[in-house]
Length: 247
Image (cartoon, rainbow, N blue to C red):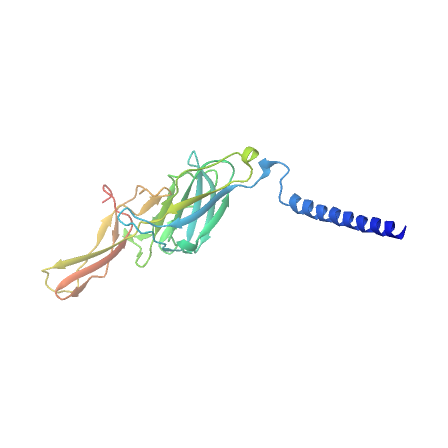
């Protein structure tokens, strides 16, 4: 009799242990399963890099003042996020949550309020070809952007399926950041040495849209501080994107 009771007691404890283990597993699963898959989160995982058609190597520039925009299939802004200083783009990863649909990601960096007047972007209203910024100027003289690097990039189109059918989906996109600031050096020979020379560049490229295109603007002047060196007058400039028809 004692042996039978002991065996029954052991079997009961083992059964209780299995029940507790099962309850623990179920409680853990219930914390990560949605009752309806249409409630599942989804979105886009963004990473950044830089590569030009003339170079085979991928580089990862330092990006400051990063701004990320997600546009839908109608080029309307659905999400805007100021991501701040991204450091080296190689280490940058950002997850942005949006509903199912067709999207593209536009990224800008290097636009600070000391040299640029920035437009206010409003979700569900702003579109991709709206004005993003214009360079500050006084009497047609552009603010100096020496030492600044402005980058722009747009991702390929990405599709997020209906979560009611596919559950939680996060698609990865890579945005190729292209520098739109140009550094130029001009050397002029054969001039008598003097201290009153002016060297400047004029262009109507001081305003740009979110999609990276140049917006209509007045002609502005980029100045420099030219110096004589070995009988040659030299001037250096940092200017925005140059394109035919805007000079």
